[in-house]
Length: 175
Image 1 (cartoon, rainbow, N blue to C red):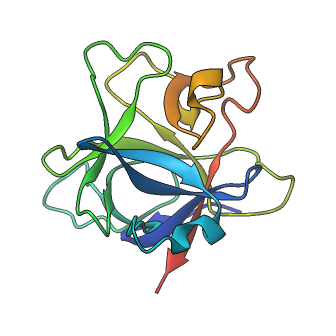
Image 2: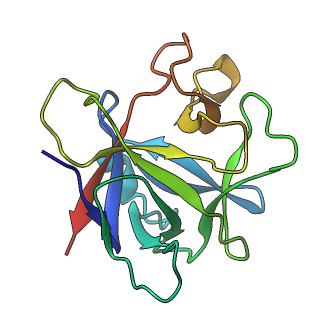
């Protein structure tokens, strides 16, 4: 059975942690982090876990809205209108910060995961890759001690031996 993803609104989860990809303020910056759904009710944070996925067609004359394979796409946070982006794409290094910027339409590669993160048959699990870096760099949870609360994100090679590296993200469609 093939996986299909299309333009639309999604909640993006990490299956093992059961946390959503959201945006939180870190000083003047909006940073992408993981939080449990019950932590999203803080009225002072105005956080939301809804993302707008827009596929970038390889042929601009075609309006590609679905794919059974890897796609290039932007991820825009519905609440802040900013895009998921790497803080410093020229020198990402281990643990590079992942921000949400209104002026940076960073294109990511969304690849169907070959296995599910929780052992189930979820057809909406994908790796989120950074196409301009060395092949195999994917969006992961940064497990370093300094970034444990709230869990931040980083780029690491797919298949790294660190715990939880390379586990997929679950895309939950929102009507």
